[in-house]
Length: 196
Image (cartoon, rainbow, N blue to C red; front, side, top):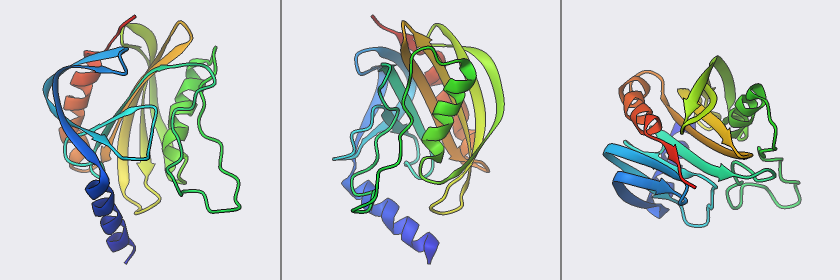
């Protein structure tokens, strides 16, 4: 029954979402330019104004590439979906970027984006990395998604330029979708360049 409800919710969300095919050069919020060798689907959900672009190959419940650009100190990396906090309850803290964060703090910050809904997240590997032309970090993680216990693998890239955070992350179910779609996500990330 739980899986049926999750499937129905995914269908309802997909029915409300705006989906646009994106290919070639794309610029996220006029700052982070990427080259797409093949098309992705950009998903916008009305009323859900997240501070990142959300792209997918197979559908958001199966894979998701997120791109953040120019997040300034004090800005959150996510917002809570409308109606997600019951009336009378205090909204939980959302992951918020602060200037001067060390690499391990940046990893924890991105990790908390995926654990904010109660999902279990474990970081499995962290390494120095160049992202969008800046020194930063790449890390791999696993997620056991709270809403349906689906086991997912993920990878994230993060760097800071002039106290602004730039990041990307990709998650997909670990058995089939992650190994098949990760090279496509990595190709997008390798092409990332900061403008301005």
